Length: 230
Image 1 (tube, rainbow, N blue to C red):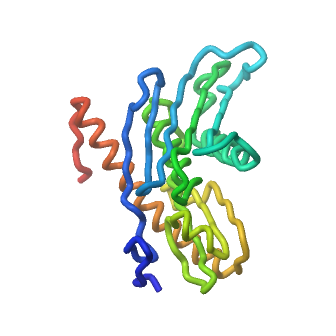
Image 2 (tube, rainbow, N blue to C red):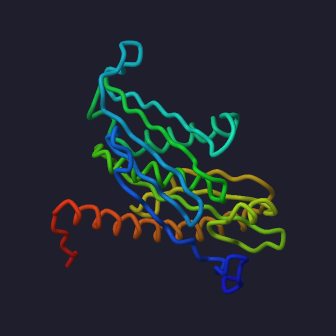
């Protein structure tokens, strides 16, 4: 039912327009505000910097993550988000290039408009690149909701998530479309999960394309010449 129309006019397989503002915080080594439509998150990265003795790891950088929800005080969900962010950062950054240092990652979710985890993890990925950290990979993340009628919806809004039978967030690295993170909640079948995997993977390709355009724009603004691949 990919041709069906949703409340905001999108088809079932259509992402909301993506946006990104880079270098948005003067005191951060890297900072990016990323959004799917009205769903926005901002991530700042500082480091590598000198670590306190008790934080030092002899063979790698220490990753410190703080997540702040859009409203209220951090709770159980914030701890889940922090763990997901830490997993993505540790999988992405070549931490062994900077032993005995500290990398601080701070994320603020700006509003409740659906696809919170995907919005947050994409902000984190872009901020790591913006900070100039050596990266093993740069994951792209999307969310898929399954309705009570069994329809799959990419990049669900908060209203769509509220009535969904299940919600699935998946992060991929572009090389061979490797799945590096998954979070699933609700009731679903193995076949539905496989279908969500394919839809999220296709959505991640679009996020990667957006990354590329955003990076080229940033490099052009800084005076670098970007040549098209042959």
